[in-house]
Length: 170
Length: 271
Image (cartoon, rainbow over the protein chains, first blue to last red):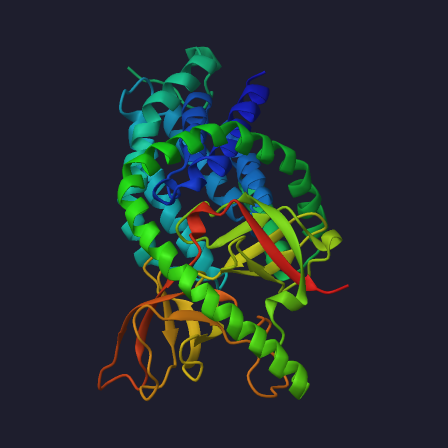
């Protein structure tokens, strides 16, 4: 059930990104998809986050007719990493979604530059660095409503449902 | 996680190095198209409302400026109409065959489906493909006639268009007022839409406000330009030269607002 809900949420977020946010140059670097994915990954863990990231990335790569796998790779890693953070140290921390979004927004932007560079495509790091502060700000502003909505859709799991390899001591 | 990363790397490799996945990607993109159009239609009233509000603020000062511009353009149109008629007559008398112009192509109108998703990306997808007569390299213009870019990936019902502002774009262009000032239009960098007209000799005269258009094929090159002659690119905003650079520094403001493209026209060869 969580899988279907996540697919629907991320599909709608992707459409919103493609149809609305990409219309405005200043919002172009911001990503509601990234914020929604990280929120889901925080609440549902690393494997769920990685699968959701891969599917969403593939959807965006397909819709924009870009090189297949580029966004999928970045979002898979982002989903897994933040999911892992959610399973371990981020539990019930108020700042966790904001910290996750801030860190991943920066890493995602430069990860994309690095991938473009490896593929021999234009990789203007200076341009990305200039647009990053605004993207960071907008993503952080989006985090408040998006995380609240996703937390309602995906209530935090009980302690017993969380991954088994993580054991709380003390 | 490892499996998904590996799968992503395989997809990148196959997608980047071959066209094996193009069919599947084109079909999937065509499946997504109704959803994108629906999302666009739902969001359009809100965007229009925002645009209308913004327009109200600028309307008063725009009105005065546009009235003056309208009067000037009316006078210019009268002069140019007679020049065009004279031009047609002279061409017919001389049996002159010049480089192809935009009017020599059929036009395919297409909706813009997606816009760039990040600062690096300078491309859009459009809702027309090979089944509509598009070809790789087909020239794309805006409904007002300004140059937008070229088709660089082609699918059955959708196509990927690289914008003029992409770092890899380069178009032979000339000054409409002084056609001997020919150079290459390239993006200015810095993420803005400003273009640079490069390789124009210092001996050529280019003035601020001059219109820059595509030069088309010059001479009898074996590799003719893919751009028809005379498509408007923009107007010169600044022009300077220095002792270091052998060419002029010319900045051009594009006539097309690349961030608000809703539809485009693709020029395809006449049937």
